[in-house]
Amino acid sequence: MCISLPAEACFCGVACLLPQPKDWSIKMNKKERRLALATALQSAAADTIVVDDLSNAVPDGKTKTLVSVLASVGAAPDKKTLLIVKDAGEKLTLAGRNVAKLSINSAAAIHVSEVMHGLVKRSCSTPEH
Image (cartoon, rainbow, N blue to C red; front, side):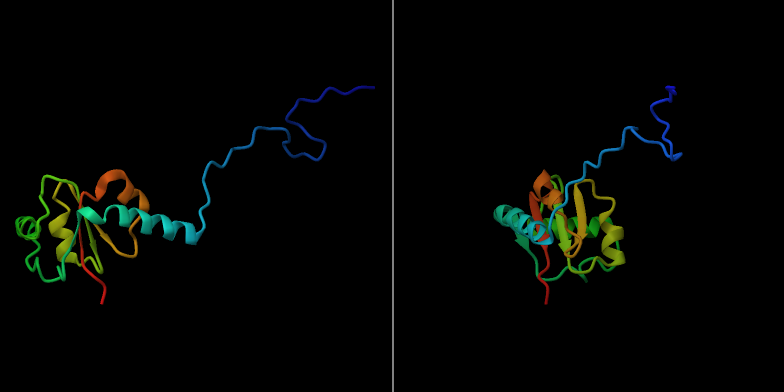
């Protein structure tokens, strides 16, 4: 005697032979990720401006003050700029969130895609002490 069962039914009561979702994520090792970041930063080194300290550059948290400070160091406000800081303080974050082509990121959280997708046209970074 042949019993006809639907394709999704199993004898154990669990759905079987159903399409399973595909995991399209790519796993990258830590060493590979660090090497990719170092290579991307090295290729963008020609357009990089290193500033000693920007922590006290915007004491009032005003956008106008931050734009004038960036213009004084050579980063034009009409070009894409990635500002890499050791510690993004509250005043610097408040001043920079209203600038259209400015991205503020900490040194620990920088990502390769930000560097590779053209965010680093002019990069102002503060060296870590």
